[in-house]
Image 1: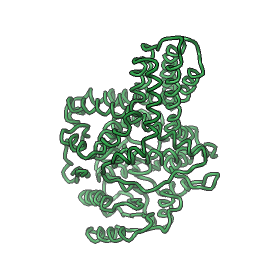
Image 2: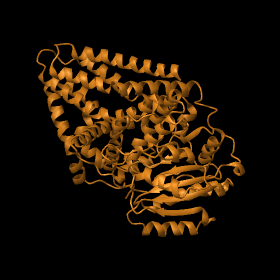
Image 3: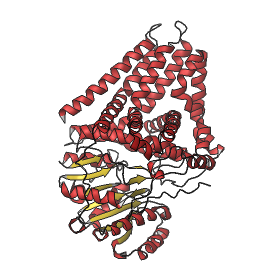
Image 4: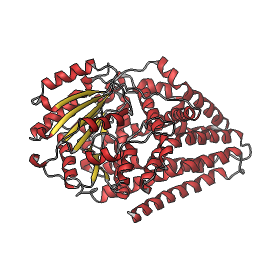
Length: 562
């Protein structure tokens, strides 16, 4: 692993050095000003994440194209039901619509029963809801309809102490007796029986593994926002995970759901510490991964996207709220970097999780400093040629996993066909890239605002999530996104003072700020979602295929948003 990690570092450094050279060509003419120095400092702060994106994208692409990734690491032969270790299916819920949660669980149980393996699994619905009466009725009906009601249990805690991590640990302490493994599922999770049995079999074959998980991809969506978001996320995560698994090995991340966990080491090593202020850790999964690795247990991500799904936020407001929750949780990791006994890779995992969000204010600072430099530099003309070259190179490095993921599909006729052929795939790629450029600018302002609130001692609510498709009215969009709009008007006013080339240069980086309000409304409009769906724009492979015989399809019967 030492040589592999050295290769990652060299690729990341090469990418950052090349970008720094381009930045120098942009900033050096006309001499250095405070605005230009600020641009350079902000760029330097984003360099670690940008370099990592480039490295994972390149490595993941090479592995995916020139050899199948990890061909022997995931057992393909059918599991012997008589020898499988007993496994608890733990479904965590908090104020969820059980009509959305239980059908996916029913499909999983049905698939396990068809594979003659269902008796080796127990189902535990672990609730942290404030009011559980409706849940109890729904689960009671769910149990009564099952062929083996005794395998389904429901438990509700009176308070959600320790959040989801506390919910899981309470179950392991009180209700997991007799089980060796645990399949963790969120309220919006879905897995096929085939995928679950393969992971269980893998855990059985490799007793030093504490966590094994597939990639988790988005369920087919009816709303425009999640369709576009998950189309690109799927390509990027596949390449990213393939590259990252190559150099991290069995010291990988844990994403907290759609994973099989070995109960004994998890219960022993994953009792999370409290933060210095006495509060509980919000984003538990990465901490649990590094604690297991520190204790000598393996945490493995298999870059295989078959059979593991989740639902994505139905509209931009829900997406920004989820991003803010994750940001708050990841920023807490600063307090954990000095925990004793962590491995170097474990500390890097925490740093990497911080970098995922910490770059947002630097990105915004770079943009505002560039606008200031463009408006106030009366000495030199706008360096259009170098500026456009820098933007193209920077965005290529930042989005390298996604772009290489698209390239991997484009090079394979079989994979293109899974996306409906080259025409549909190409249209999806172009639409998604434009959408992402707009979305990332909007998200950067929201993340920056959240970081500033945290720095000033504010708190961000960690509430339940709306998972249902809905429209967004203009009033709601204006109340949520007026800061983005104001920042966009100010920035483009400054760029306009420097001329049309500066304005054109800024649009890929900041255009989303100007159109944030209509972007929010239109991507939640049921009519646009229906139009995209009917024409199969940004459609994922599950929309072009049916489930294997004996395996119920995931929630593919898309429902209209209106």
